Structure formats: C-alpha cells, structure tokens
Image (cartoon, rainbow, N blue to C red; front, side, top):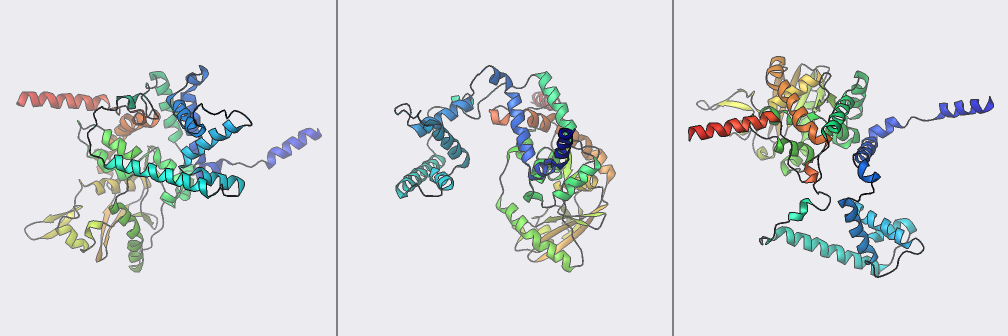
Length: 417
C-alpha cells in the first residue's frame, strides 16, 4: 500500500511539459522528425542506406583523412564523426566546439588554418556564383544524388491516411484557438506563430490564390508560400516603419492592440494575423510602401504608385477602393476569420497618412473567396505539406481541373490559328 501511495504521489507531482513544447515550437520539430522516420521505416528495417547517409560518409571521410590513418582506437573515430555532424549543421569552425567543450582555445595555428579554409570556400562559392561561363555538361546526377535526390511519392493509401490525419490535427477547439491567439501576439518572434502559420493558408496570400486564372499552375504560389524566405528591401522598410504608423495613429486617438494568429472556426486550414486590433470589432492593416517615401499618400495614389484606390483621370481625383486588388482580398479574409466588422486600412509615408474604413462583406467572401481558397488548399498546398516534392527535385502536383483548363486553352488556340 505504501508503494502505491508513493507512485500516486509521484504521478501527481509530474509536470505537464506539453504547453511549453508547443509554445517553443519544439513539439512540431519533434513530430517532423518522427514523421520522417515513419516515412523511411521500410528502408530502415531493410538496412538500406540513403543518399543522406552517403553524404554524411563523405563529410566524415574528409575529417578522418580517408582511409589512410587508423582512427578506430579510443573513440577517436566516433569523436571525429560527431565533429563532422556539428560542423555540417552549425556551419561554424570546429575550434569553437573545442573551446565550448574544454573551456580553452585549441591554439592560434588551428584557428588560422580553419579560418583560411573557410575564407577560401567562401571565395570559391562567390566566384562560382558570379561565373557566367557555360557548362559543357548538365548536372544530370543532381536529381539522383545528394539531399535533394528524387524518390517516389507515397502510395495512394498511405497518402490518404496522412491527409486525413493532417486535416484532423488542424482542427482546434475555441479554447485552443484563443490560447494560440494570445500566445502568438509577438507574431514573427513567436515560435508557435511560425509553426501554426506554416501549415495553413494565411490572408496575406488570399489575393494571389483568388486572382489565379483557371489554367495557371499552382507551382509559383505553393513555392512562394512554403519555400520562399526572401525578404526584399521594401518588406524590410515596411516592417521598420510600421511602428511609426502606429505611433501616428495613437496621436490621432486610435488605440491599437497587438494581434496574434486567428484560425478560422469552420475552415481551420485558413488563418490571418492583422497588424493590430481596435476595440472588439475592428482590425488594422498598415502599409508603408518604400517607393512612396518621398510622396504623400494622396500623391502616391494619383501617380499610381499605390493602386488600391481607383482615380478619376479627367479630374485627377481619388475615387473609391478597388475590390479586385490583392489588399481587398487580404482584408476581407482577415475580417471573416477574426469575426470583426471593419478594418482600418492605413497607408503611411514620412510625409503623411491616409485612412480608409473597409466594412466586412460576407457576400464577397462567399462568392469570390471561400470556394477558391478551399480548393487551392486541399488540391495544391496540402499535398505538398504531406508529401513534399520540391525538396526531391520533382515538379509540384497540379489538380486535374488545372490540367483540363490548360488542355482546353491549347485546343482553343489551335482552333483560332
């Protein structure tokens, strides 16, 4: 009886680490690793090596000098394998690892040697990048070797099971959705925001999806959403100046609260993060275009630097907003997902600020957005999330409706010619 009481007392004292794992984003990383292991289960059971293993062997051979020297004694070989892994993953010199493990520097000779090698590799990489010389032979083996080597898709049964599981995991309760909203207020500084956003279609991409022509492949949009980390100078400028716009709004008596990630109640694969919230029924969307830094917002609109508003060319006056613009789709998506009534659209430049109130339009959402977004996510984005093709040097999947539209377009071209 005493043993039972001790066990029950120990269980009561146990901490629940799941909340911390989710917030830090570590849980998603662990699940990704486990999913990768399960996908390669057959190869692991049969003890079949992959291209990644061969790549690792290549790195190790460089560290141990090939087979010329016997490093198998006193765990020396294992230590060099570990050093190879750390150097490959961290992209930092090994002398830093030595200093961190033994609290002493390996010496100036070793440091200078590694620094020279790193500098030489950087120069060679830059020279190859800037070289315009034509290649005599195409890198045919690139699709058959290395980390991006081709491998077959999942079989249809496994793909279907993973698809259902992925969609079920996206669904969250109202309490869970509220927790995510609160814990992702730091947006890009929050690991949870990055992980939850990564597996959903967000409002910033709604315009690209809804304005896509029926015959246009989904490749470019899927690649932009999942694999593009590019941040232009204009985007950096906008993020930097967003605080100035918020300060200007505060001076005007408009209080802005920070916003986290909203998840759609009915379609949990859709999400939105407004730039801010106003009271209980408003959102804020702020644009600080770098191309308009020398102009007022009104001058920028009249000179067509900003095309969200239409203009009267005869009288050179600003008319209403353009409902076909990418911003309009983004705003309506934010309002529908966050269940708020209006959005205060703000354009800020160093020479002025322009405000425009945009009310929610449920009819526009139902007619122009909902079906297109659902179809794109399920047919284009979701397959790449479940069984990625891009890292395997394979073309993106395109649904049959796009292929049929392309075929019909080609037939019309032949008839007209």
